[in-house]
Image (cartoon, rainbow, N blue to C red; front, side, top):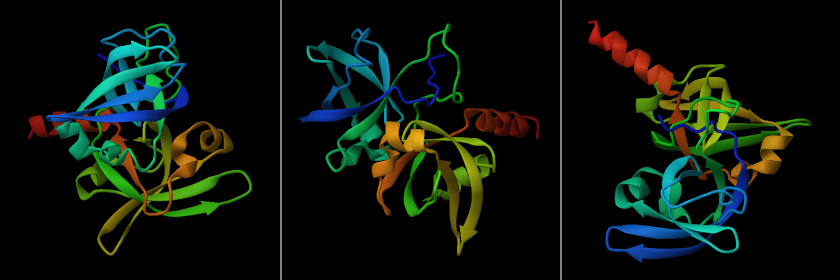
Length: 204
């Protein structure tokens, strides 16, 4: 099974976007993730698992994003925030530093608030109704491909939300520091929760 860990390897940049009949082709600069990349490899871009089409000089690669992926993720707005979180698929000899992330975006949320403190920043993000049952306090969630721990959950007048606390390393080494209030982010809930739900329903 192809998985990621949610531990961002580098912040890359979209340098070109070309429209195709039913997709777009992105050219992305990421010298770390392309250092050993080959066509057909998988790289998570803001938490979306994409296939390398071509490896180019200068630490760049191209990838095609189908219409379905554009509709379900923030990649449809990629021109607004060209910096992206990049991670190669995990290998069997690598430590799983975050949690199991598939690169299959379950939905998107919007940043409601950002509350900085001396050592971290608390970010509150909307939670789509269909995903709320999979999110628990102290559980894991991937936000734009970053593995994070849920520090709080709640509901304000029917709008579910969750909070994560971003430490200085996360703010410095991912794109999450640059997401403004009202900015949209990709969400992937813990796949284990979805499997548990499926098994419980199978026995009822």
